[in-house]
Amino acid sequence: MIAPLQQELLKLQKDRSDVASWQEESAAAGERIAQLISLAEMANRRLREMPLGKQREFMELIEAEVTIIGDAPQGRKGQPCALAAVLRARA
Image (cartoon, rainbow, N blue to C red; front, side, top):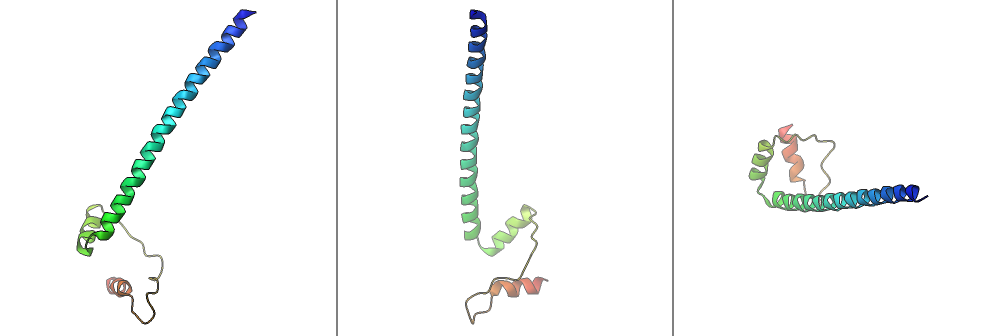
């Protein structure tokens, strides 16, 4: 009568240990995700603040490939889009 209860207790203790381990792994993964998001945000800010020449050099270093999927968005009314002119010149 006690043996089945003892086995059930051992199983429940193992299950609790497994769940605690999963919670630790989940918390560590959440921390890694938060760090990656922070790093990506910092990289985005730094890249936007970088002069265009340096941006180009960086993109060449990382061998970035870009596919243009549409026209450049319209700028302010009456003002030509400088980016569209650059893209047309390169095409």
